[in-house]
Length: 195
Image 1 (cartoon, rainbow, N blue to C red):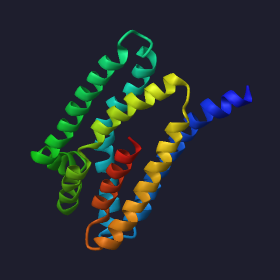
Image 2: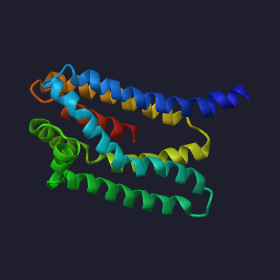
Image 3: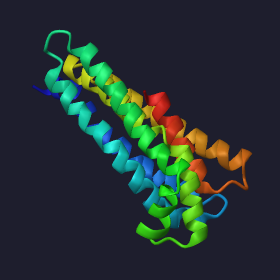
Image 4: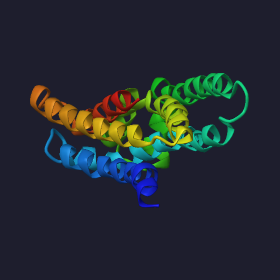
């Protein structure tokens, strides 16, 4: 019926739309900040590696929805989410701490040395994102399971608002900072407030 669609399915359909709005918003912000061409050239390589490490967390949402009916499931799922968050964020942090990040940007992504350095530093700003994706999937899966999904859409609005405010504040308060780094910080801040 129409009420069920509006209260359950419509919020779930709006969530990916809001998520997709974040990428052009980040690009628009970077193009108005320091080193816009370098930031925009490095963005696909940085966003790609971050997304790769976030993917297990995204997939965890479906696991939560399907297993939450089982006895004592939430405690087990929470423990798994925390472990997944720790592992995926630690792996991305390894890319920032070790030369692996430089290898990804310079050799695999074939970026020029200044762009590879820009991207490798961006890993420091992004290393929390895989862990945040795991925890978000835990809570979003529980919300979907409860069939009261409005909170998911509201959290996405909070995410976009935080991201926008962080981009504006970063451009205003740190005009010499490369836009890539401010965009990554804005994504992390948005994900924290969404969580």
